[in-house]
Amino acid sequence: MIESGEPTATVDAVTEQSLLGGPRRYTRDQVAELSGVPVERARKLWVAMGFAAAASDDEPAFTDADVAAVRAFAAMDPIAGASERSQIAAARTLGQAMARLAEWQADMITRELRDADPAATTRTVAVLTELQNYAWRRHLAAAIARASDTNGATRSLLVGFADMVGYTRLSRHLDPDELAELLEAFESATTEAITAHGGWVIKNVGDEVMFAAETPAQGARIALALHTATAEAAQRIPEMPQLRVGLAYGPVLTRFGDLYGTVVNVAARLTGVARPGTVLLDDGAAAALTDDEHFALRHLRGVRVKGFSRLRSHVLRERKRR
Image 1 (cartoon, rainbow, N blue to C red):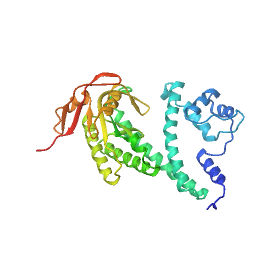
Image 2 (spheres, one colour):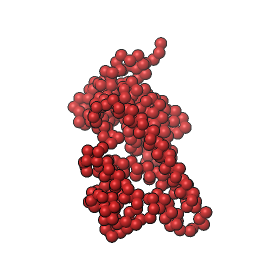
Image 3 (cartoon, rainbow, N blue to C red):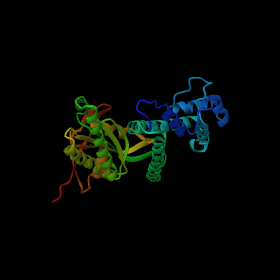
Image 4 (tube, rainbow, N blue to C red):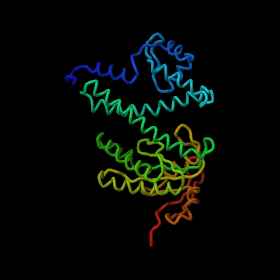
């Protein structure tokens, strides 16, 4: 164990070498020479992944793992169409995803293992690496199965947004621990509701979650389950606000794990005008659910929202059983 007040430089050095695959020993020019990738291209890949450039070309800032990574990106030519632009885009997306994951892991490690010895930290990193690889493989298998029947980057999906009503005002009155508890409950409840009904989370942004599903029926079940889940969470956390949910169905562009297009914009706009505790659908989702015995729809007059002069919407409810 490290004595209280003792510098953590030793722990940091041991952890860094474990994570980086060895000591820093190569300059930028040496990385280019060893990997067979031009210096400028290697630099673009490095920066695209979110890493700060070396302060000097003479600084030995890179490891054997860095050389291997640059070489691996160069070997992606058959997949990326021999396009440097595609490789840079792939590096940027990978870097952004890993950066967010790393921030959470670093926070956990420094908080929980602040007084631990280097060996304990290294073991924890090894376990996290194993679990990370496992989760990635499972998610990749599921994503490939979903995308196997599509043609190109465009596919028809149900896109949904759910956000917490009055979050900005509420967050000003909560201390950091209370806010963390609220966000944890929100993310936990929404993720469970989405995945349990066949959907998947696209991203969480503060008080909002974006999700997708293969069919409007799946999306409708998710939306109703989201309201139920947050109502249950409110029994434990009184500050938990109601949600408002917007759904739209149709062709979307899938790019590096995100979704784009008119359908996405419509779903976001519907969320913004939905009343607390309700679900609004666009015409595409409503048409697919009109004859579904599990759901009831109420058609509303069109509304004027940013980007759409007359956006038609439909309130979704679960059909009551007689």
